Image 1 (cartoon, rainbow, N blue to C red):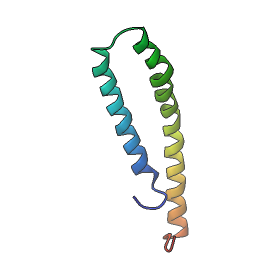
Image 2 (cartoon, rainbow, N blue to C red):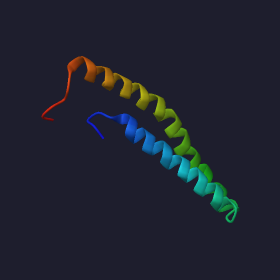
Image 3 (cartoon, helix red, strand yellow):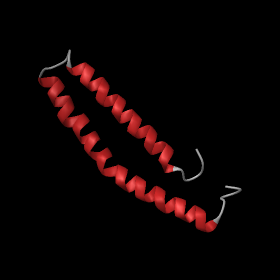
Image 4 (cartoon, helix red, strand yellow):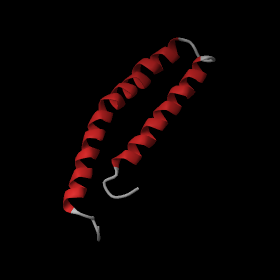
Length: 78
């Protein structure tokens, strides 16, 4: 990953949340009680919501950093 490359990390985060969604779907086939609903409501839904809100900001910041990199030249020696 190059300096100020948010795209790679964001992509990894998107892959991780998709893996989590799939794992939770598989888990729900075997664990479907009040505790599972509580876990989903208090942990998984807020996480998904926070990530959905973060991705547009990450994408915007990545765009700004890419533009700065083009305008300022290479970041050598950092």
